[in-house]
Amino acid sequence: MVTIYKVLHTVLFYAGFLAILVLAIVIGHFGRKDLEFVIFAVALAPYLALMVVESMVNRRNKRIGLLREQASAAAANLPGKLHSLQASAAYHHDAHTVWSLIRPAESATFLSDVQRAFTVPGTPQGVGEQQCFIGRDGSVSIVEVIGEESPRWATTRPITEDTYNRRYTYRLEPTTTGCTLTVGVIMELPPNAAFAADPNEWWESHSRIYLDRIHEVLSGRKN
Image 1 (cartoon, helix red, strand yellow):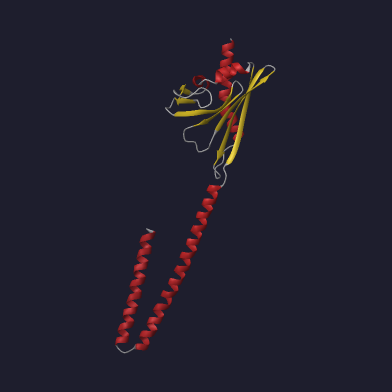
Image 2 (cartoon, one colour):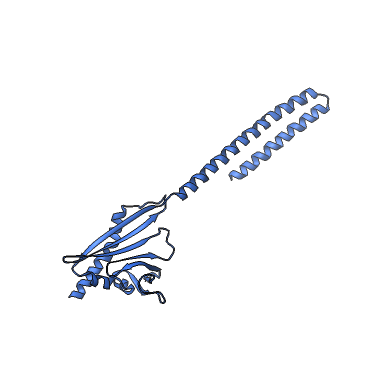
């Protein structure tokens, strides 16, 4: 609608300007050259002023647009915000026992809410191994083991599209009564992104279900 008004305004302006010029020519034709000159001058003055103003406005808008593009490019080149989050739980079992539970891909079916989990055929055991997880809603995710020292620690990363460049860590440390498992995530948020809540609380809540299920499974085996 705004475009229509602009076009209509432009058409009416030029139509009126041409009508004034025609009127001046007709008046000059009948011998009033002085009046013809005055009409031409009066008509051209606002027209030239309008052209100058329009040129200045266009240059200003172009400069503002360029500054906005430069600001957007600078924001895109800013480093992301790196977050390292961790949550831990202690178990009355040695590290080998906990490792043997959490390490196989298939364990995810009773340690999380996935419906099916397996090692991707053709991938090696250990570093380079890929594990596939199929959710109850049909979603599919695949992670790759990028570092491992059994039964102490492992690091994985999603191989599907991941805008946060995440890395998941699992570390087992022996204690006098068993061991402690620490699960963590290292993720890089875009410069303009932020957590809606406290990131440490979010990761603690997210990981606690997994850590508690490990305890439940180990307790069931013990009994």
